[in-house]
Amino acid sequence: MSVLGNVSIRLTEEQGMLLDVARSFVRDRAPIEAVRAQLETDTGYDAAIWQAMVDMGWAGIALPDTVGGAGMGVGSAVPVFEALGGALLGTPMLSTTLAGQLIWRAAGESAAEWLGRLCSGSVGTIAYLDHADWGSANLGVTLGTDGALTGSKSFVADAGVADCFAVVASDGGEPVLALVERSAMNDSALSENVLIDLTKRAANVDLTGVIPAQVFRGDAVAAALRDTLLIGALLTAAETTGAAGKCLNSITEYLKTRKQFGKLIGSYQALKHPTVDIYVGMENARSFVYHGATIVGDEVLDQDAEIACRMAKVAADEVMVFAGDRSVQFHGGFGFTWECDSTLFIRRAQWAQQMYGGAIHHRKRLASLLLDS
View: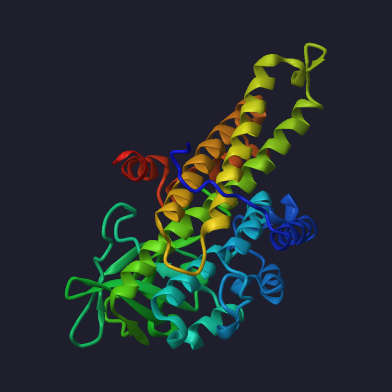
């Protein structure tokens, strides 16, 4: 008998087609040279590539068709994120998808206008963290009686290009969701963060004095926030698993071409065994990710779904950290240089651990879910 309870996993025909299409897209539009060309730009991504993704319906893939989305659900977003991770492609896709999930789950069709904008290509993001701690309440921003916000949020993903912000705030000690237009902030409201993964962008956002365009209250907000953070862990795990696969491909190609002492280095067991460990870890993470894709739906997430999301994040983080480290080591001195792609993998591993809780964060919560009687 499994300690997990629900162990169902399936890759639907629809998800398989999405994975094929997404892989073809990143292969044609985002080779590693194109990704590297964006590393030191202001936005970190090519606007034309983002627009192409919007045109394919990916920005609203997980939102219902009643608000302009594709109506395919969170499970269908997973293969897209796996493919994007496999290219190390930085876009506002994750930020916009999660902002859409939070708004939809908290407000439903009463926020149809906002959701429609996200589906049409407006960039959205969630302003959640107070001090970069996923384990705290993160309600440091307050909504005053005058209708204005007070406080700031840290590490807001893609804040520099966001058109609208889903701000998690406190009103009388209760969580509320405040939707804020970028135009409501002054130019000095954003302070850019320097992230270790240069394919990603984030900024601290000062919301003091900003009046939200719309505020949603009630029990649905807390439930939506909880579920969106779990979905964030799942989609980040999908992206990380894809990146681990890319890293593994890079390693195996190097092992098949690099010679040392007259022999291909791939013939040495000291390198073979860790490479197999990466493969096993990646497939393990993929299993957890697609288990999550199987059982996470539009309804409020149950305990099985919570376990699935947390397990996926633990597995993906661990294999990416190991794969990135081995990639650097296997490439020797070259692996430490900017020209070697190993540096991109190890940086992605470090970024992924900080997003939506790392392995320790999720294991602590899994212990009570799986072991408490």
